[in-house]
Image (cartoon, rainbow, N blue to C red; front, side):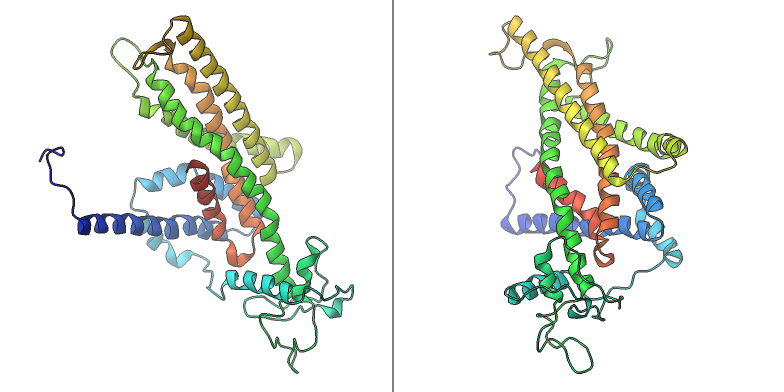
Length: 348
């Protein structure tokens, strides 16, 4: 049937369409990112976890898109180190905020015995300690006041007293927010560049030889190819070489920093290329004409796409590894989802 002359969809059909799209999004959100965290949980050493994210977000992830990943997951299920679900970490974070507000006028203490370090559900018993000095205002949530404890030492009012560990976990989450939010501002230009690159390609000479023309929509493949290739080089060549020379493995923050520098360079290159394209258009008085092709090869767009791809190979695995190592154990599966939230906000 000709789609132009086809009957319009009914409201019920549209409802089924959007419900199906929503279910697919929920399924991908629940499976894709928790699977990455599950894989990293199989390793104990932080450097091995970081290497897993390099492979998992690169070649391994692209390969699994083409195969039935569910069957592979089930085949290896009995070999995994399981993480048993416990109490909700989001509830604990809410308790820290509420307890801090309720004890806002309480004076902080410098004595260890004034803070609660006991057992509370999913938080193990730790040696008595004073909460850290960073974000001290939240230390009030672990400060013991009259009526907070039962006679056996357990918490009497769960929304008035938290453990020191819960407070410190909450501070870790607050501590990574500046990095996460700053990455949104760096991710937004990448999203704009990806759309602008296609528009640039439509107005440039896309001929590659006498019989082939590069599709404008396929120009973004260069970004994916450069990311995939450089992920392999990082894992197999550059990181082992760096470790031999320095005796250390680059930290996730160092990887993120290098990635952001490359992203800034790619924006600079993109600006230079667009400036050159506009100069050529003005020279031939083509700026007011629509559907015109500037006498400039589309290959000029490749350097900026390659730089963006290499930058993503640095900072995306670095960010996931950093979040995975910094977040509390109960929130580690959220570390991979934070990247998707970042991209969703930056590209929207």
